[in-house]
Length: 321
Image 1 (cartoon, rainbow, N blue to C red):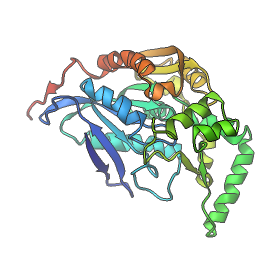
Image 2 (cartoon, rainbow, N blue to C red):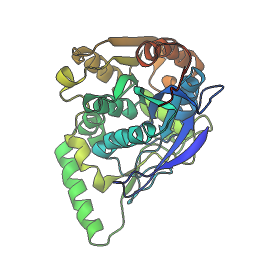
Image 3 (tube, rainbow, N blue to C red):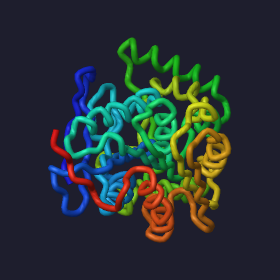
Image 4 (cartoon, helix red, strand yellow):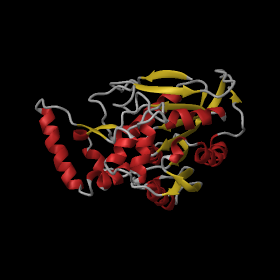
């Protein structure tokens, strides 16, 4: 693995990324590549990198897992902004970097995203046609979630509060940085926060199971307005033409990955190859790192990417100009 800083000419800050290399990697050969996108509130060292990124690299892919702008080890200020438009632009910026690498086959680039990253992966694929195949793992449409549960089903009230807070900050007041989860599973239980997704997210992010220094699970409240007017699946019937695989768990939680997965699978009618992987007995956060469901997901993901990103199971030799 190699850690890099991506600094394209039109960027005011860098994107921090880990490149996972396949076994026996040789720089004079060209390889298919996969961009791996982390969940909302996460970082590249968590499920997108150390689970799916690592596993797909072992299957012969160059995988790049990166931190979103304003988050993790990436640049950008103020910190902890969750801006869907920027998140989608990050995907294109990472692809710009990939196509500059001599060992990446620019005709064999795929994208994979987990949770909110799954929604961003799908949305990026609508317009970024350098992406040849997309996989959404327990993907969530962050715009829909913000308009519903994350705003207390009061999106207009949330927007008014964000506007007021942004004015306070513009006048020099203190930033409002919201912590998204309880401090620990015990705190969650003590406060009755035992809904499946909330509790399992806490168990992942707030324990040694998944905790990482860059996985802050924080959000700058005042800069989240645009999220409420964003839709990961807008124009999917027309623009989502590439092969798409949607992986969901059938144990339903409040964040709505099952619902969103079924919706985008149903709407992806223009896709060259749409596939639904619905895993019985598993939940949203089981698909982050638990060997059973992750193994079942990879059993479908690996041949899917193999079909659409490479002609053989091994890297091809780079031809001389």
